[in-house]
Length: 634
Image (cartoon, rainbow, N blue to C red; front, side, top):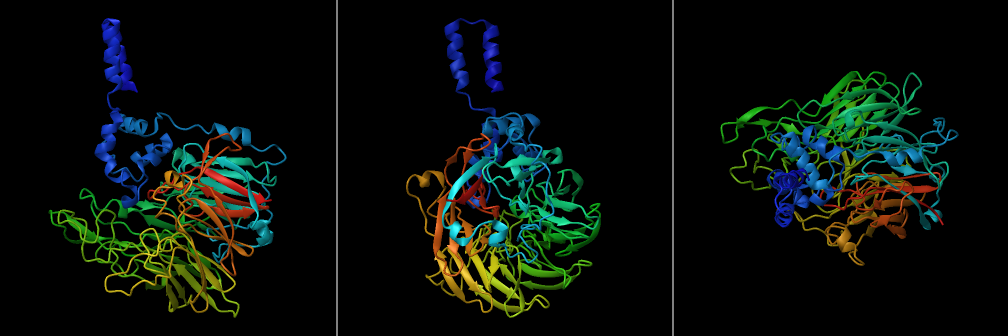
């Protein structure tokens, strides 16, 4: 540490006798790190309480790279909180948390680069995963042929290899897959890797795309062939930059920052079509608004259609009008509204109907617009709204407010159901065996919805508890054979004035009849804190549900748990056919120390006889990790 170094130098220059110098040096070594006071004053309130504040724990921050934390403090989510910090304060803070003072080098990748015969990217095969939901309907289903795995093989899997990414705390994105090439973005590496897995035992890297300026990446990639015949990947970063990259070479075709408001954020996977790229845009004002210093609330979500060749905007759909002053918030400053309706999920496009379907999030200020917590269809041609259905009204939610805020919390309101039950899961355009089509949606309230695609009329709904801010139904659902497969992270609590919750409802996987909404079967996941897992999985007795998006392979559904376990369940019965505990340390192919953690978001795919899963999700007080794991049949 520089403070100690300067003290030691000063003592040496003073030429005091050796014993005195040693004593003074010992005293100096006991001084607190200069970044400790910065942390306590600016960060501890949130990061020492990660489960309540939905922020990374202090220990998780310590595993992050220097560049990721630097970006967060200067251009990212923590920009407002760090605005008053000097460059020295920021450097001391990062050094205090991580022990690092420079950016992480990507030295591990060079030895893994493919030889000349494996470098060319074969883009002729039909992609097995081209968007968040794998296919145009967002079903998250792979056939045995696409995966190279049968149900029988999925019941007998061994770990084939692991690759770890240095100074990373989560594997949040799934790859696009074309043939035997995986296009995988790693958020904290600020890089997209094109992995070749044609040799199941020896993956190699065809090319690497590094984010300009080092901004962390965020979304999964969308793949498609545009009108000039080029195969492209579209994905977005934490800085709200959309990247469109040539899939053959990894070279950027264009980048475009699409932020429109102070807290705009891109999370959903862009959808690549021949003549346009559909980009959903969210916002994270929810995490800032409880601070009286923030002018609240002015942000809302929107959808963009961009020219795939140039990035030029073709149209923009806004979930609501721009916010206007609505009243004095109590201290002479104005409260603004409406606001909210972030779009966290990835849109599903129906080119035959000419419609784009997606769901939205909560309101951040009154009046709670009717497009908050809503399912929406807009026209593909011009972005005009066709229908909207609000699932939960008056859900005005800002982290740190609570349902009964203190009078001096000027941006917080009490006239709200305060549930934060948005649509984080992407919608599915399902086709039943009788030819009917429905749009299926999963909400963090624990509700499954079936909607008429043309009108937005509710066909049926199924409530599986009351959910929670992190689900309920969180990142995704899947569909096959007239069945909606629904992972549930938490059942929730009875609502005031509501019906009691059926005690038979438990966290786990639900198979819901797509025709009626009836539950066909349910697999209950139980906590596992034995054999030292309680030391590795924070609050393992509570954080063990199914939150991430599921993946169907042949006749099985693969699901990860918040405490780091992988499960394969039989599609017809829900019977557990395989499980693996990823919460461990790994010797890796690339020599980087590997650590498994929570499995959340979307990271499970299959290709060429390998089941692949990320492990690690250092948010919301969950277990960080940095590995991509590959499993093969015994």
